[in-house]
Length: 280
Image 1 (cartoon, rainbow, N blue to C red):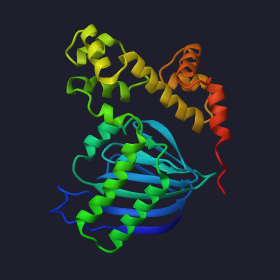
Image 2 (cartoon, rainbow, N blue to C red; image 1 turned 135 degrees about the vertical axis):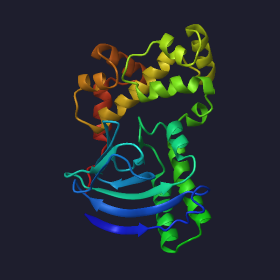
Image 3 (cartoon, rainbow, N blue to C red; image 1 turned 90 degrees about the vertical axis):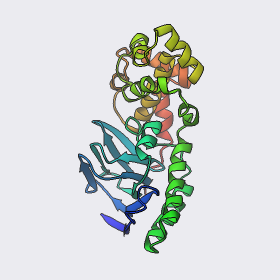
């Protein structure tokens, strides 16, 4: 393991309820010897993978991480992450604390989907470097708060549709969060409606008015998005991936996948994996 940067911050405890603070930050290169496993720990970690591959495990589910991904780990819940032996990762990371981070995790669905793809990597790297410099200079907390907020903004920008979904009526939020966390389980509209205290027809109307689609179609897209990540980043069989995201029948999985992506699962995997550049 090689630490390129390692910083310990000293946040003012009188300001921690007001500003984001960063008690720990670093930049390292490591293989599978970099392995973090905790039941709980203070704060939240943001990890930017610059090169190589790694993983993060939340709630018993393992999510592959590759170059260009940003990872959000809520350390208050059991978590695990580390680099790959065959393709050591290079990562920048911070551990942050501050107000409303738990709420942000709910909005961003980090428990079910902690890996952010399609981020502006150059901007994220500049922001990490700026945070490192601020910690080294013992900068005043508001400056560090502003820089940390830039990283949070990058995460929000990468999660498409979050602006609309963050405005879901309160009465629907419990049902949406349940589907987001347990997308692999069977769901009935009547059961979802019960969580909102509505009849099934009224719930379906309210759901479509708020999100522009039916509850079942929303769930179908969530499952396919989860499958896309697994197809691109793992070598697991298509049947196994179908089961992991909630399909017991591979035929229906393939049908939905092509309808929503324009590709069969096999075509999508071939396209995604052929685009991966082997690390140096």
